[in-house]
Length: 316
Ligand SMILES: C[S@@+](CC[C@H](N)C(=O)[O-])C[C@H]1O[C@@H](n2cnc3c(N)ncnc32)[C@H](O)[C@@H]1O
Image 1 (spheres, rainbow, N blue to C red):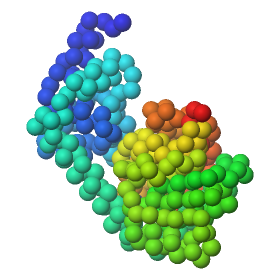
Image 2: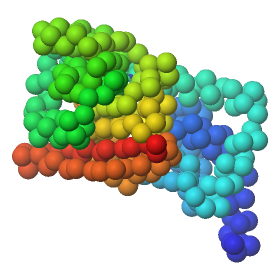
Image 3: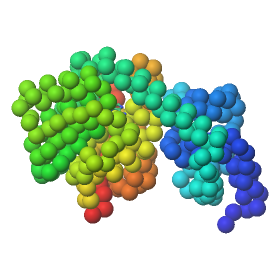
Image 4: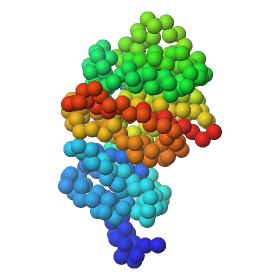
């Protein structure tokens, strides 16, 4: 039960056109203020003011990351319930709503294009870049150990890049599929798999933000150093979940939260690491549970990044 003034506050915050549009946009995934400004075609101070009102009333949540802030729908409470009620009743064919949906798709496409352009330029030197950043060997050993020596029928590696995970886990699957949106990365992956004699794995071009379900089901899905390229990793996780077989395991490797802003400005990262609390929330929303987390601090204490391995599982 809430106090009268509190309830009126929530209703007032939601009771405005732009703010309802914002709620509907966030129902499809988290966005930065910059994205929302572009989608709504309104000034940044104006959009920030609307978002602040929504956040203060508990309709949305704010997550500050370095110089950026991400917004998403609140997960619980009166604000969350009111937002869900409103969104469920909003006509997707409403003219303004249709325009917002189209702009939201365009913003996502342009981000994807930026990431692809970056990966096209780093494809051939990617493995070198990786070894400069993280305790690679320990992480790879932990990924192999996480499967406990079992051999599964199908493993899917999302954002496979140069196919390193398909190589490292080659002994753990009968059929392996790697998906990536960069032709250049895939060219390196094909060469790598061929020279390692790994005939049971194939890689293909695809957008993992819009996954084809027919690729699954897989008993194991690997998402290695990919989620930080997405504004809304939770949305991506929910997509991946649709390909996971009952009782399956998802292995996610990514950076712990950090403040290296240059990774965003120079290396196409969108999120400055992911926290275990965020991961638990995204996993729960996708119907998964966090079965284990391991952390790997970098040997480079000045600019080093901690890497996390999350093991997510589905109910049987
Ligand atoms: C940092 S690399 C990691 C590659 C590989 N998983 C590894 O750890 O070696 C990230 C990869 O995600 C891919 N990627 C980013 N956004 C994608 C998308 N929407 N669909 C498919 N692949 C994507 C990039 O092309 C890139 O190869």
